[in-house]
Structures are given as structure tokens and as C-alpha cells.
Amino acid sequence: KGEGEGGWRDLNRKHGGKVKPDVVFYGEALPRRFFKLYQEDTAAADLLIVMGTALQVGPFNRLVGQVPSDCVRLLINREPCGMSYPDNHTPPLEFGFEFNRPRNVRDVFHQGNCDDGVWELVRLLGWHQDFERLAGPPPPRAPTPSPPTPLATPSSPPVASSQDSLAATTAAAAPSAREAAVGVSAEGVSAEAAQQLSQLSLGD
Image (tube, rainbow, N blue to C red; front, side, top):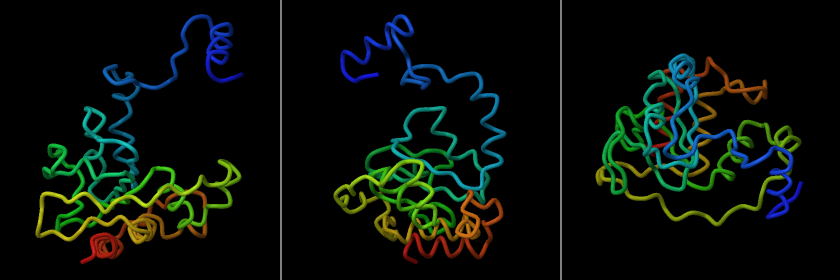
């Protein structure tokens, strides 16, 4: 009912003892349901959105590499992470993101806060009015983040972190979303769209 000490005391009286949210904390085992469903779920994915993480804890971080090879993968984060090649901060992740690789045709990095990135994606998809009815008005925009962290590939083009990245994602993964406004299209990843995604997001 309330916040602070009064709030947890209300919960204590209602539920008896400590209350644990339905989440997995660091160091805890993942539920059995995860191991039963992750292969089926990742195999059916046509768009993977990763937000607000360092992707350093397994086995969850390996889900990035479990999706099909034509699944568009979008990272909304303050810094790039989970790359398939080593950078200045994290070791390489097997089948991880290929942001700066010439062969990349599906991975997009949008640098910034999660809230801002989600609202920008919603706006580009034309869902902003419906989303505002569900979540309320967008929060004040956070300060513009610093330029993307340099990666350990000096000859590579810069990692994208602009509106073009999200625009490319919507173009490649959801061409009919603006009309349907009900979800990401499962039929939107084509070779041509993937090539456009590569050009827009990597500045080639």
C-alpha cells in the first residue's frame, strides 16, 4: 500500500514473512521451465531485443546465439556488449553480436537508456498512442549518452547508436507493423531487408 518501512510492513502482515519477487537473482538457479522452453522459443524468434545488461552471466547470455541466423537482434544499452569478438570490457561471447563485422546483416546497437530506446522503437512502429494508453506519457528524455565505446576493431566502421539503427530494425523486422500495429511481423526478414539493415546500421 505504501513505500518505505510502512510498505514492507503492510506486505509482511498480508503475506507473512519476507516477500520475494518472481525474478531470478544473481547466483540463483534458473527455473526448470526455462530449460524446457528456451529451445522452442528461440527457434521461433524473428526479432530478439536485448536491453539493460552486460550479458556476462550464463546460461542466459547464450540465448543471444540460440536464435535463427535470420533473426534480427537489437541491443538497447548504454554500452555495446555480448559481441562475438573481444573488446575492451568483456570477453567474446560465442555466436554473439557482430556489430562491427563486414558479414553483419542483422545486428543493431542503439546506445542509450532502455526507456528512451523503447519509446523510440514504439514511435517508429507507430504504436506510441496505444503505448501511452498502457504505460502513460513517456518519461523525460535522459541526457544524450557519450559516443559509442570504441571496439577492438580499429579498421571497422563505427557502431550505430542513432535513430537510423531503430529505423533499420523496424524496416528489416517489421515492414507491416505500421499498418497492423499489433506486433512484429514474422515474415519481414528478407535478404534485401537484411542488406538494408546492414547498410543503415553500420554506415557502409
